[in-house]
Length: 337
Image 1 (cartoon, rainbow, N blue to C red):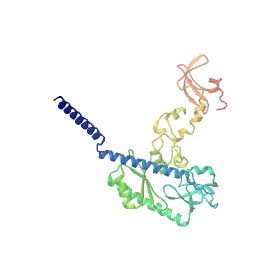
Image 2: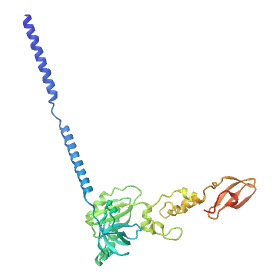
Image 3: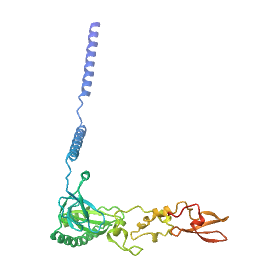
Image 4: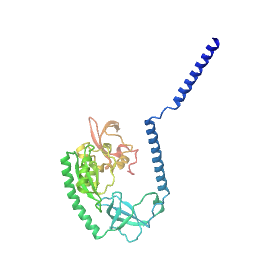
């Protein structure tokens, strides 16, 4: 009986060991889930895309950039901004009209400066070529595009009203080869113009670009007269807009009337920045307005100053005086200001 019981126990232990081994093998042989397979495929695709991108970057680095004989300086329309283009002939002169290749497509520009020899230092930048000198056909095409752009503005304006979009159209412009039309607009907020884009693409059968600009750029495009009676600075000669703050008006001791300090764009006038650095230099070492000073043993308050004439107005309860800076502050050298 003891032998049988021992045999039975040994059999049971063997069965248990078999069960454990089968369960362990079962853990190892778990079927791979579909989600895991998808993740593996995604990872493989990402790695392949990254490798392809790296190869393209390496090819661009290795590929030698094109060199030209001359560097031509071109501006577009009435803009004062100058762009550089490559050219191989020496027949370009100032004010010549040329056809160039830009990011937007083929455009007509004007040579604004004598061409210079193309230097090897320029190879770090991608320089587009001057395709040719403008022909009579190109000049006629430019005039036709201006008329086409006017009609395109009317059509685009109608589409905007039909779709009820909150945007104001300013300008439309065709590239020289009519492969693209650019619509410039102003809007207070971001506009969802996907439906408008579809509608315009179906009507014009070319590439469409909708460009949103701010109030300053709007004034630059439209133009006008400033408070000084001259044409606005932005449309006349400014290329970029600098930051203008109310502190610049304070430095120049101007009355803080926002309506008088604002231009037609509704922002602070750009001309406030022109003399700001000079006013800061001229006011160095001088007290602030309403500061108390002592003059001939009496205390006065500085109520106003004319930095250009170097005169100040001081007053107290008994007296008001207009004095030169040299008399009030003899220790400061005003000759170099």
